Image: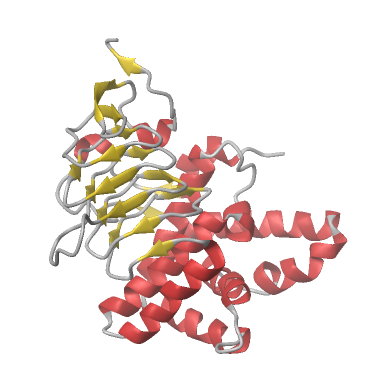
Length: 294
């Protein structure tokens, strides 16, 4: 089977920012995905699945083969996953199509996230899998919808989608949180991201991670995570601390203070254990505590 990891660059137009170019609020800053090529590859995979697994044929037809774009397919898949008695699939689908058409940058963000998953997750063997099966992708896609609604002052509908993501995917991201492009939520179960959190481009976050506050403070009270950061499973980052570009947070750590760029921290509370062994830990996805110079 084709490995999409080796083809990431062919799905990109221009260069997307890396960890060493991080600056304040580096959110979907540069470059754009080749949506036409991505859609062609997704469609090819959908046709293959339809031909080789008869029981998935109707799903492939409804979500992919009868659609004309990646955004439309994303709307179809998400409407199937999020449909409830209080908002049916027939109601959700045109709403999502309208949101994606009015805000094409959302579709670009979904494409960047798809590429990130294919590039970093060895379990991903096909470009169609994130949209079809991976709840981390579907959870952040639902967040992106809720965030756009929040920016449009449609707060009640934003809360509705946030609650759906929590219920369906086990992921709780406040609609006001700011999250960049090229994000991998690996497994995603139990992820919590608070209202004033900022997560820049090209960040990888594993399951059971909390980007939270420390109490009942108001204002900017949640973490800022710069580009290229890897946050290990079960890590808790609390308060308005900054995780510098290219840093690595060890699994199970509790981070209460700033982490300088390129550093690795671990423990409860987290302490410095060395320089990150990779320039971009988010892309390398090495969750060990191996550090350069040690």
